[in-house]
Image (tube, rainbow, N blue to C red; front, side, top):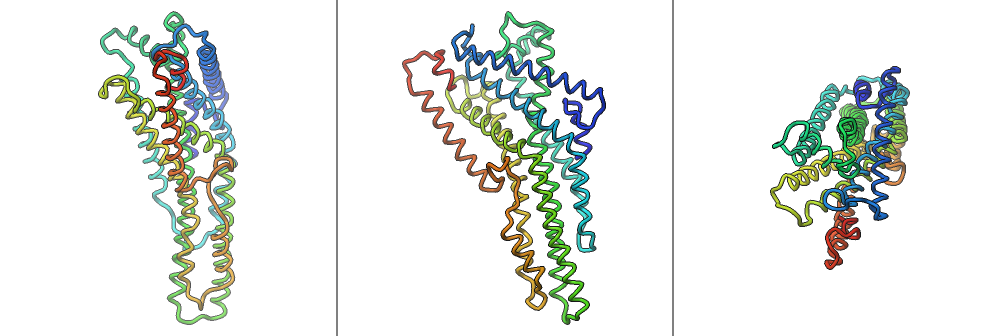
Length: 399
């Protein structure tokens, strides 16, 4: 994770970097603020009826979608900036927790680094494919490079740049910031997944330790006083390790809470938007634009589900030691095992969105139900008044 935090400096998140990286981060932040301010101003003009062009891709919906996209990137930059600055202290606390149970029954997770790099490479590859499909649906390959770049910027950023406002000095920074914003759009969920994998790995090692100790205890035929004292001490250390692990989860949750909350909000918004644009009639089903909406919808849904499931595994792994404790023979059952059992049963450990909701397996179904509900509402509003022209502000606001 520390290596990944250092790599984030290239996309404007300095962390503990030097002055050059902080200057670069300030430039990225300033450009995102300028783009976001311009996008908000164009939305206000569209809603107030002052906009010059409200047709096609410059409708109110397109302006609002672009504004939300850069809002997600801007907020992700600010949150990850704060998280990277506090990562040094958080990593030291995490390392101190690793030494709380230094016994021979705790196995090492030798594959955690390999799994994390696999996730990073997989998410990066799928994000690149989705972005290339988006560019292919916008680029006109039959023109020269300069003209092609101009048309791409005007079409992809038509929510904030009109044709008479375009210049090369505007197009190049906008194109660069669109790439960085795309990285931020995927980075938020990636950080949540990687952090959850680390917490789950720690819980799985503790659960394996409980299983090993229970198995060894049940195989012992006779129990002497010295062995009973050592066993009581071992179970006390195991229980304290679970307590400190729960403290680590809550400390991580205090740092990731805002990131989780905005991740759920923006993923929910873009799933509704892409699903609505995909199922509403308009254009050929096999056009590049429709193919892009399908690919983008599939990617956002896959990324959202994987993020929620990875974070929900923290809650799942925190309870997985209970079946092993139930298998403990009554002859070796002691007060520390009873305390650990009550602790795991009553203490609800999970990552949250700043305390507004818990990330567990049922949250995926709740989110899916909310998506279906709001998309149906949007469709009903879209077809509520067929007499109005298609370029009416009342219609384009909901499309």
